[in-house]
Length: 365
Image (cartoon, rainbow, N blue to C red; front, side):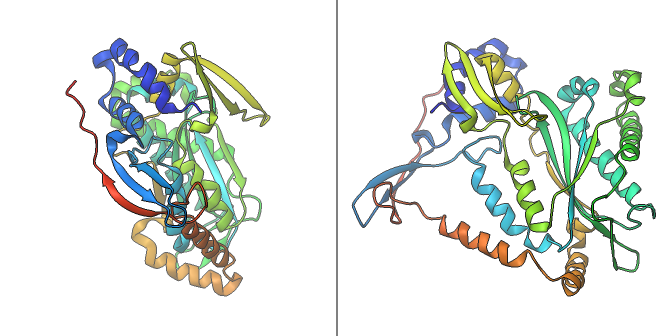
């Protein structure tokens, strides 16, 4: 099976030679980490099956957040930690997309534009939700930044997972309508205005690069119901830990060309895309986030500073509606624990970790 590491291994040297110092250090670091992930270079451990004597060499992961081999387990671990955030109410998924005219600016000023997209969209949701015609209370949100479309195109957008309702000034829960949260047309205009004003204040030079028509067009905003809290978190987890492309989607690497599959957004049908290896690498690297950038953010009554208030709110709602998520989440944790051991490839029994394999020393470049 062809992996992303194979593409970097065979075509990364020519890509680095072609672009040289023009490459961002973070891009070089991510490529190097993915190339070395779970190879003898990083070292590992020897595992032995006491039942049948089978021996396996398992090498360490690189732990880079853009590596497709390192993110699967993190989704399970994140889900386990979110139990105290669950509320027994309907949830909605809001998606706010950066217009195409701003994508060139975003590529060159990622930290600035991504941060402003978060601030503008979260502020717009909170502001509109306070309107008595809709929720009339403070809402809570979990926001996740995504920068890619399914064919690796550059497509920055933020997903927000939002409980269907909010907290009033006196601390009581006020539910939203069952299948309606906020009007997306009004939300689109508020996001646009907040982003425009924030960009003008933050960086006048960047603001001057924006075509004036961007401030007149409709920005794309979607809102859809996604079930209860348990289902909503499972829906969101892959968005948090998915990388731009997983190894399972890469079909082959032949004659300097990478072929991968993707599912279209409009029809859901599987399609195949073939790119020159250099173009494939370029598309992947444009989704590498700036070092230390926080791509998951909590707002409103879900923010970290209000967890005691959230716990009281959760008890209030459980008394009214019960806790439909607890049993299933506990089952998920048990399933995860059952999968945490290393199974023997021959007999399926748990293998015992043995001698450490030291990292391999590399010759200086």
